[in-house]
Image (cartoon, rainbow, N blue to C red; front, side, top):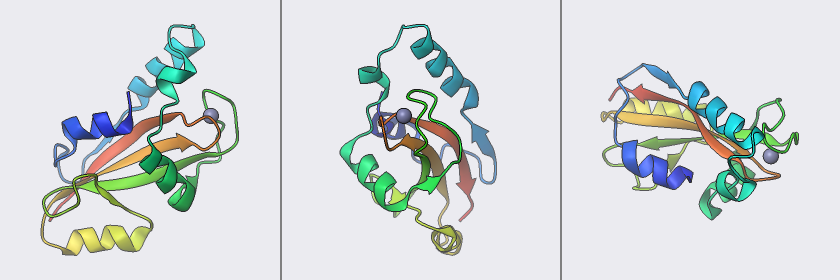
Length: 132
Ligand SMILES: [Zn+2]
């Protein structure tokens, strides 16, 4: 499942303002299913072209190995969704972007995605609401 299909389902302010939702357990289940041979890299290393582009330009290094290929190029990227923002989300390239979200007067939901720039594994790590 791609990030795009996940975000299309829950990308419009579902998270409560300020609350951080962790997706660690869902991530671990997916990694486990890969380790046990129930999922292939074709199924889970499926970062879409736009996500790859953003990961190349704005990815912040995670300093932990990729759970799939054990590579050392695992990064995070952040997107914000909400009223008045682009349908595909706004890329949050730095802290200034998050401050801008706070002062625009509309609530938004931010999603932190981990992406491996070697095998293109990608998974949602956490989401949090930004009050408007
Ligand atoms: Zn990888």
